[in-house]
Length: 330
Image (cartoon, rainbow, N blue to C red; front, side, top):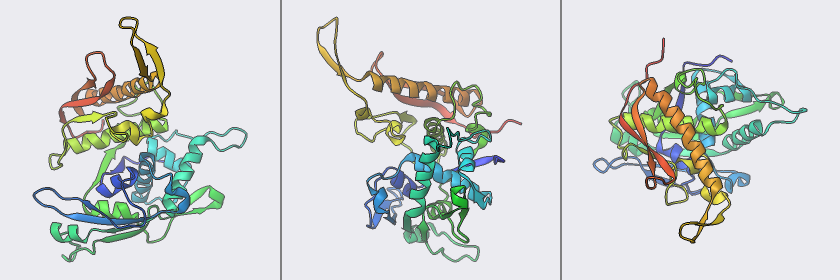
């Protein structure tokens, strides 16, 4: 498949509420989308099939939506799971692999995400934003301020081999995000394994795809002076179960077994998880390699690791200096 020059990431608050599972089902959820000096609200309601309610949503689902929206923007009417994977990775060589006709776990995960997103419906009421931001159409009339429908307006066809966009249907969360200019356009070089990241020592797994996109999302927000950001730090984890970027991609400390060790120096027993520590180190290594590449191409000036004490477990990174507008190589 042809890989476009750009992909897109939705950073609107409604999208974040969904993949962070901050909503109440079958109820009108009202969120603040303004500032202390200019308060305003947006409301939305989700209708989720019973079979998916306990499962909820994830950042992976958001990455899938971003890929579908990218294909929608480039007017691709027929799409396959392979097309979606190639947009997620920005790699035309990305493939699903099969063993004796069995669907690979990676493709199964993607298809399950698509099914959930296709069968979940949303209504977004942003009329207050339209009024306060004075959002108008080409005829200088205020916009309607409503968006709704399936999260992904797709229809399965060809015995599951392909999906088609429903005629005349937009992606409602992206329709809203477009209106308030909360969609980031990302040059393919920042994600593709053949761009500035060609020296990475790891492949584009689902975990790596999410890490790349989370980093770009945070960096772009930091680089936009109009955004109200909380500093230049990106935490891997925090005191709360959902704090940091690791829980966003499904990596939680409570999922790792705890082990008892006795200090040779003090004789005290210590309860810790080697598996958790190893996983944090593994993610940090990947993040640092990505940021080293971004530093080399001038996207960021520098960064430093954040630790719990001089020899403690790394807990995140801090971007030093400015985040610059990326210029693709010619």
